[in-house]
Each structure stands twice: as structure tokens, then as C-alpha cells.
Length: 101
View 1 (cartoon, rainbow, N blue to C red):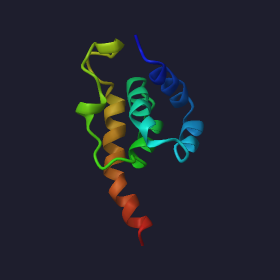
View 2: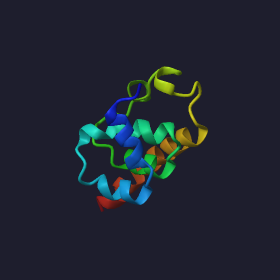
View 3: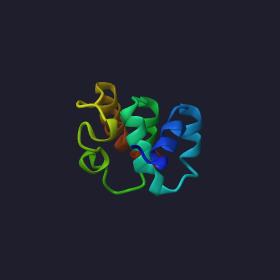
View 4: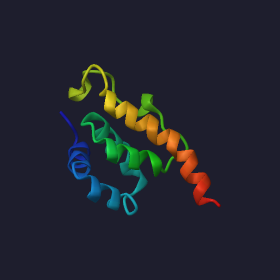
């Protein structure tokens, strides 16, 4: 059974524009649940926004993603979700460098 927090995160991540707009005002404690929901359902644009604004010093797949088949998770992660996270991580240093100039 999925938690109420996770179910709410699923609803927030369904709408890219709204989710990205809300990230600035959401508490950092919600980021892991939002990441899990966006990752599980392939919300690639939301995933990229989450990674680029990640409020913690480390983004660990091992800690964020449950074991396969736990709580209805697929056995293999969605390829597009993994790609979105990697692309956002690669873009993050460039965007931080340009904003510091």
C-alpha cells in the first residue's frame, strides 16, 4: 500500500508546469517523495526540474528508489526516467557556472 504522501506526490508531478512552479515554495522534505513519484511514472520534465533544484548535497538512487517489486515498483526502472536524471545532472554544473558569472 502506498502512503498518502506518495499519492499526493503523484498528483503534483502529473502537471509539469504546476509542479515546477511549486518547487520554489515546497519544503525540502517533500523532494524525495516527488522524485520517487516522477521517476516511477516517467515524468521526465519534472524529474529534470527536481534534479536541477535538488536541495540536498547528495542525490542517491539507492536511498531514493525502493527495491524492485516493493510497493508496486517495476522490476526495471523506466529508461526515460534514468536518462532524464542523467541529463539533468550533466546540465546542472553548467547552469550553476553560468548563474555565478
